[in-house]
Image (cartoon, rainbow, N blue to C red; front, side, top):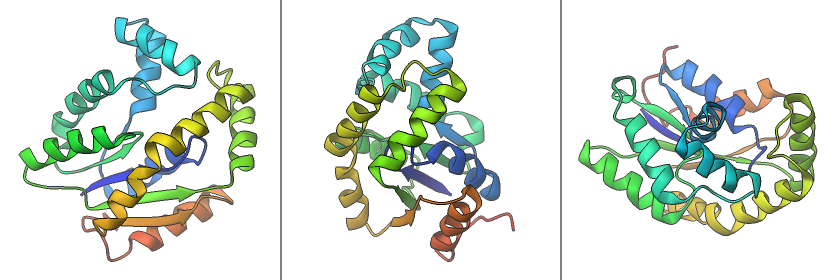
Length: 194
């Protein structure tokens, strides 16, 4: 099973990705985690990515594509995966399509988490305080939301047209959102470990 979780920064994708991936027995692959790991390790890619992240901009496609495609080629992703944070642009959709076509498959489902903008800002400011994240100032958060609307939100129409998009309300308690996701996916995907 191959899935994508999409939504604005702060919608709860990271939290839900882990839960959904565990439920279906597939790895959760987060570009944000990949970037932050490289930043904390001080790798050359991490230093390049940090500059973009600190400004609230997306890491360029060529850097992102290389990391994600390498991760998708690893053995544990052979039977499925849940992507969180990729693709973020229409160009990345094409890259992912090409990669999946080479392995004779496409995405089974795309889950869109929807959430109010003010709630996102509040969540991310709290996370910044709790985790000491330098990339979560209010100005940067609002810029990231603008970039999401410009570059990533158009993917919703692409996946809706393909008939694989399900929209889920991302507001409320974590367990409630998880239950909504499983309800939306019920009957759409195979491979549940239940």
